[in-house]
Length: 370
Image 1 (cartoon, rainbow, N blue to C red):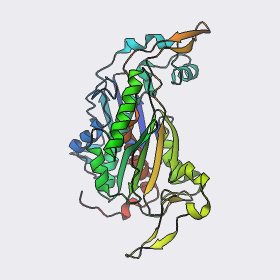
Image 2: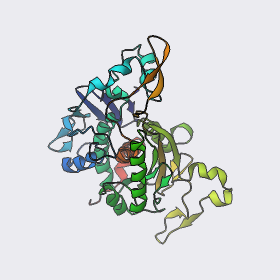
Image 3: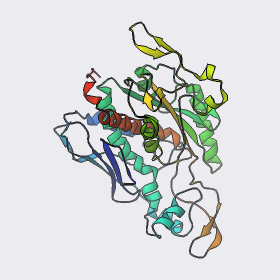
Image 4: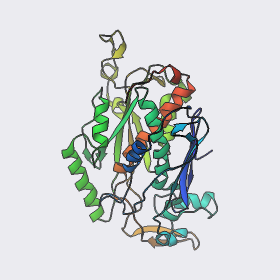
């Protein structure tokens, strides 16, 4: 199905931005796993809009309602269905988009595919609003992984031309918690202040700006994934590209490796003091041949600028087949990337848990105190 991903853990997302509700179903979660709803709410609040001038003015409480799959706070082995009510919609802002599509948005392609019948209010099923249920089920996966010593963390690596400090090669999960507790999710607060100035400058110019998110997963065992078309990079990429506005992805050194010689790009093997085989560097991003090598899995996700901007733009009238000017109303983010940080974590957690379950490795992981 188009709005689903995963093999053993199958995740489906449903709803539209201005519909009654949105939600997700996670089928295949291990039974008996505790879900701390307070921790889940804290995680989901990290992606909420309406907090300040850096994001959209649309603010929703985003309280997940568990319809199935949870008994007395524990997963019961059946599909986990989570619903989130839409309570703050202004559909009138989108009336003109039925005939005049927004440039670089999904309005036109959705019109063609579904013969003009798609609900495009607020972006419909293509909206970033659909990342709320992704965070809900992904937040559950994060809790399950944490009990197995696997941590997923991300930060806002860049906005426009401004870059944050990258994660260290072997990050401590405590760093992930420190970033998550910040109002602006960066490592270097000075870089974060510069990013915020760039976002506000774009808003002042009735424009938007893009950026990148860097994500690292620690605690993964070696040997996860498969070669060629079902590697962990392939499976991660399929899900990550389902996040609205994602246009690029690189693992480890990514495109920078193409400018290196092999002598610099290679990751020399070594044995640590505990007799564990590891590597001296991690240009591969923790993956070789589609299979994890025991080093942290590292990748960066590129997000395009929000296409809904307040400047007058050139478009067309679909019904009249003539050029037309478009003025977009509504509430939109001048930069979506800072709110996407927890979304990347959520999707990465879901894929990681799915790979562990599919490879039969989940059961061998002992639980740890969190």
